[in-house]
Length: 285
Image (tube, rainbow, N blue to C red; front, side, top):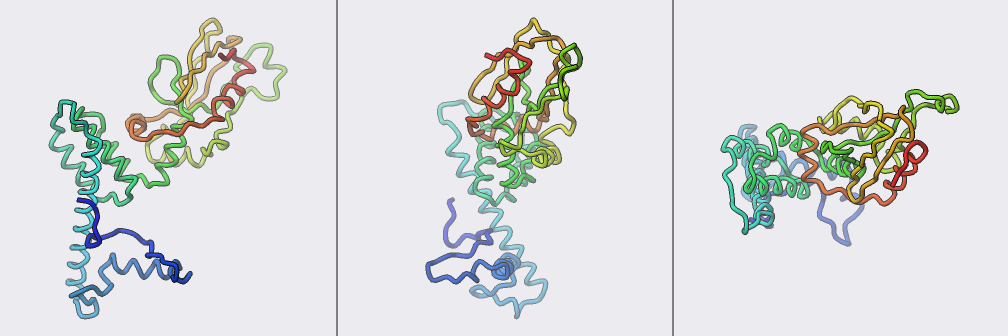
């Protein structure tokens, strides 16, 4: 079920060879290639100039149906690789499965197909992990947005015993005599240094992966140590006084479900940067 030369290909990239001119990658060339997808290019046994509008529409429908079938087959083949043979299988909800394939047929990007394949494999062993709402969000997710999610997960943390993912944005001093000697009561974590500017956060909010509101904890107990769980390490924090609270962005339920699919890279500078930000008002170990 892998792609062959006879299968349709949803791509705007022209085939390159050493003798190709630069014009092969021009915008006009890309536009002309769209004609093949729309059924406006001649093929064996088909000439659009000799076909009626209805015939061209039928030809395009056949091409898209073939492409959708190829997408589903590709996802299914990948899912077979991810499905363990040493675990008891389960039957996904039939309505969920129908909606899954209705959406999956529209996924053309190979890397995104891998995400859909992991979902299918997971549902065949443990149904109920991914809601239809999450599938709909994933269907709208471009590969570039998936990379933004990956960067967000790289700097995501879990605070204390709360399993919900958060992106710390900084902390705030709410009072005390020490506040009088500060230029600002807020300390901000420069997320843009780790590939996550505010525009990227807004994009994830628009997709429903992050809540659109910035949250704050209550004032932290200076006598109580709590943990920050990073992707590859754990920090123990103890507030030095009783006028501190953390600010953060919280992942939605959909975001938490998608987090199981995307494997964040380890950002070697994030831990030290976070430690440095907190060290002024927290004991960090």
